[in-house]
Image 1 (cartoon, rainbow, N blue to C red):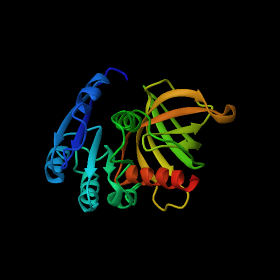
Image 2 (image 1 turned 135 degrees about the horizontal axis):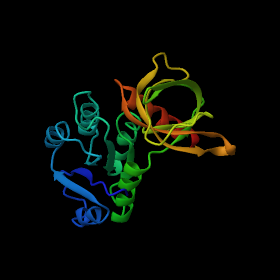
Image 3 (image 1 turned 90 degrees about the vertical axis):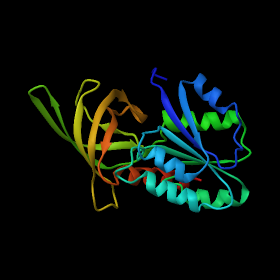
Image 4 (image 1 turned 90 degrees about the horizontal axis):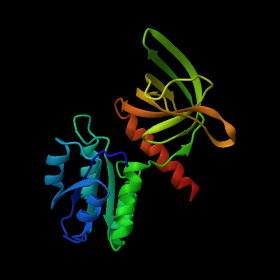
Length: 234
């Protein structure tokens, strides 16, 4: 953690989550709010940004599907939130069908409190990465100096990308980027900042970029790409 207070919205119509969950999250620097319906959740999350929304699903995924779709709308304040579904037996399959389509992870309803807390922390603090060879073009401005580069990516997540390049840029340097994902007609565009200069797998030198803003449905396309490649591994 970096001292930032993270926010969690819990949607629990069954009142089945442990009452100690909020206290456990506070110990990790997380502030949580709880509501009993998807309708209440949307009113809150679409007007206030949350880092993660945790939804207890019972019986059907209809409410979860509508919640995931509406949260990702451009006007939603929580459009880039992580969405964790806690589903019972019959609802687990339909909930997993929404992975990569708004839902980031599904946990069993009987998961231990410790596993639920760990799942929340992992989603918010470490977005999964998958290998991706793609062309990325970026334009960075350093004072009066502008640097333009076309490079190859090594891996990507919904929150950032590792770019193979010898170019040295200071941490925090911001840039416009255009990412051409193989098989997708439209490029993914937005702004990013240099999180670190690092050495990746096999000694590849490059930049770790953190996405600050992704235009249109780009973030959701990245999530879907990551989810599909993770699923393909299993």
